[in-house]
Picture 1 (cartoon, rainbow, N blue to C red):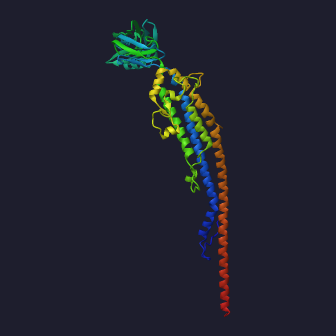
Picture 2 (picture 1 turned 180 degrees about the vertical axis):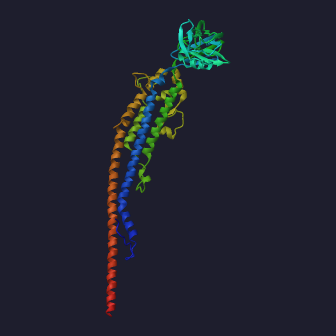
Picture 3 (picture 1 turned 90 degrees about the horizontal axis):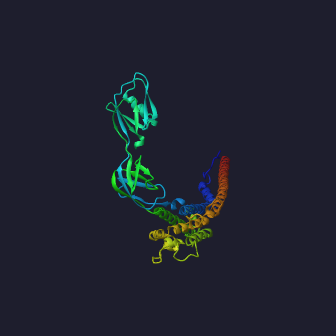
Length: 455
């Protein structure tokens, strides 16, 4: 329980103000420790940011060698996709294929009439083209035509759709082609039948007849979809090559992540400390200024970006980033701050030319050929020791955490001492006021006694 405070009632002193000023002096060491805490937090945050951006660069480097990026693709085009379209299933022979379609595959449709509700339970037998039983559909006694439709539609193995059209049962095969022909025994009297048709046509001079309009095999490696009759639709298949847009996208992403790392490193290395920092903002500045570890990372990244994968190769081969259009700028361009910092730019035209001339060499350079280390592996070998668990940066971040824990404990001890100190100051001033009050009381009592004695 807090004691009664006599704040200058007797002495006339502003004891609260005096104690506050004394405590401000006492808190100065704590304030310095808080500024130290801000500085360490800033250092940890800066290192964590570098680690995050380096990991992003490592993943971008890994993407340069990813199997999916370098998998062969082929363009497949139709000069009339409303009649015939196609898509690639596997490797297809490059060239133009002339497709003629004289008949589209269609499904069989049969109409039955004369349904009357049976007096007892019965069955409708759905039979195949050759007369063999496909399935039997149970029909309850008294079933209406709508009941029959529901019963057939609930039997997927029947492979037909059923519908009531003006009191007649219409059945349609779910599959196209003549092999899907059927009959329904016990469904009533057959009124009409629209027979199924196969897809018929030619590819070049080779004829085909298929059950479906979606066909594989008539052009090896392609799935062809027939949409209408045609006297000649041309399907053009390009030569196999990596997906150029995918490759360019991964190179662009790498350049972006590389430049993000350089921006972060240069900002950290160039920001100077604030002398005699008096607040957390100033204390946080420049905590990685000139940091030797970051300087080493920067130097290693720039060295790797300029690496010749095959130093013995002649000048016309694709053995470094610059040879495929990734550099700090063209020789004829104006020098700017970004090029001085070593930031990369991508010359897409030069990359396109390299992919046109020798896509395998570009793939090998970037590390996409199995068993051959390229630039992707070179960057990964530089970055992994820096960012992995218990690696270089992780060790420094953990050291900062240890220092922050020590500072936190120190601040807690400061707080305990300051609380005790403030209580001690207030007790002293309260004792002073109490002593002065007693002195005044004694003085008043003595004066009263002397007055009573006539003195």
